[in-house]
Length: 372
Image (tube, rainbow, N blue to C red; front, side, top):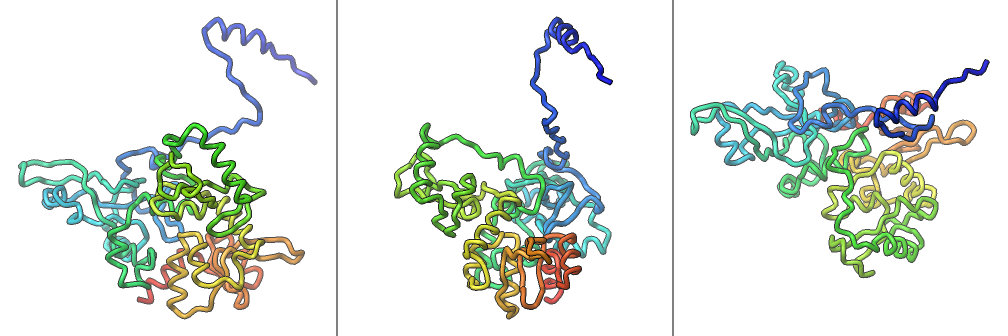
């Protein structure tokens, strides 16, 4: 039975009310609203049940978060004068947070998507004789850096001071982007600063390099959108060819002063797949190659395995099924031993069913932490 609906008559009535027509198709995708944790500038108070982990990092409703205690009590004056004297902020599920859980003091924390390093704090000011609220530049928890072996914090102890000094939340969030569904709104790319003919210049330069990354050498002729043109000196208007470099999205975000750049998980997986098929990563890759090309959230763990005397693994390993089809993409794998580090429990379960042993990134980091 065919139904007739007076659409034209309805539109006439809508027009009389001053409304305008909006295009709509059945293919339209309804964007779900962002969770409050992403849109809030001051953060939200959370219970322990709302805090999750992803690869050992802290998560809330699909977004990467930082946990901190805003109440600085009678020390607030000192903290406002010197943020480094304040309570540390947490970026990982470290030993400190574990101890707080055991003491049932976790409820004091606030979760926030913060890439600036400035946090809302409050306390009783002896100087002013009243409760005050302001912002302070708080420092990262050292136990978090240890837990993640961030930038080799545990495996290269001579660099610990340098690593702490150079740590910044925006770069850390960008490096971790493949693990999370939602990203900070500050990561929305700003197109300002480029010359009007930048797109033409970029297209021409990338073509001159045959759409290959000049850093890792992956061929992106079939995926040109993943090849960027990088300004070596950071000046977007300096378009001399000597200042340009064609780099894939992963290599681009790893360039100095590019802590604003991120990469989606599906794009990182595609790059690893291409690198593997083109022989850039594989069984012959050296440790230095692995550290350069691995997804950054796994870098600290990889360095721990090397320090522990493990055999050199493969990254971006593709596990084939009975008919030769790829059934799993593994972040770190030792194929001969049938052992792997994976991103989530679903892949872990799949590997178990195929005779492999597997651990998640989170479990592997915790195992190394508990060994210390």
